[in-house]
Length: 322
Image (cartoon, rainbow, N blue to C red; front, side, top):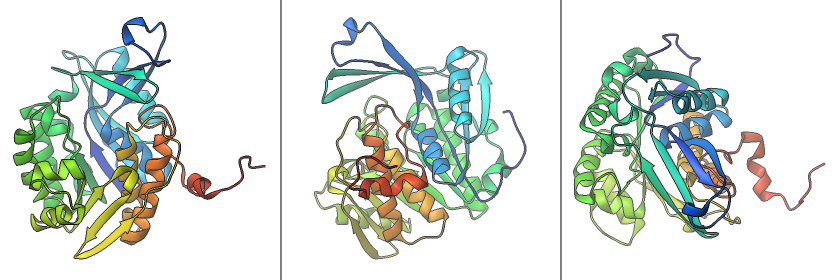
């Protein structure tokens, strides 16, 4: 792992696999796409970039291949002002995902990550002091789905954080192409029991705590496992948070949707930015739905994430600011 210097405090630490991302420039069958755009995407780095744009110092740790795509991943995240701590794997490639926009209103994401460098992350890739000095550790349910070794790394990081009194944030972030709902459910419950803040869509929450159409009940079941806070993301219906027994609801912001991929990560970034800043649950939710809305208006996983000075743009009635 490169870099041993401590970042400015307070900072949020996160880690996970970030991949190169290719997407067709126009809707239609991928087999007939003549041009594609190259970028990057990964849940945890999306959150790190979102936090940084909102003024929170962040550190992202990851494992990349010794290849051009790995260089792209590190360069793009670092360019956003995120403190990157990467391990370069000489024997495994950087993962790749491809977005196909079959129609203007639907898309499919295909992953090429089996045996990738990111799936081989180990506890040695994480500086224990970096974890124990953080204001918050954020992890996602994608990491334990990648491999047994990646799961062990995540559990190790949580152990270090808890021993140091560092709050742990966990976003379930279910990926059906990586594992079954049954396999994910047991792991989710173990991690939830050790987390302080848990994020989940209503369907994701049902994987961990059983089916149910009532988001409030799902939040209560999550909190019953141990966390202080459960936040249920409801897309166009907004979100709710159960915080130390008190329920908070927030409507969504109505926007013209271009691409929903990454909106959940943007929501998490908005919520955690205000958590670290010491604001209450209502303020956290308001910022979270705003950052999620911004992400929906732009193609890409993270490119549309707002800076704090831009948050009020969604309230503006003026099409041109001079």
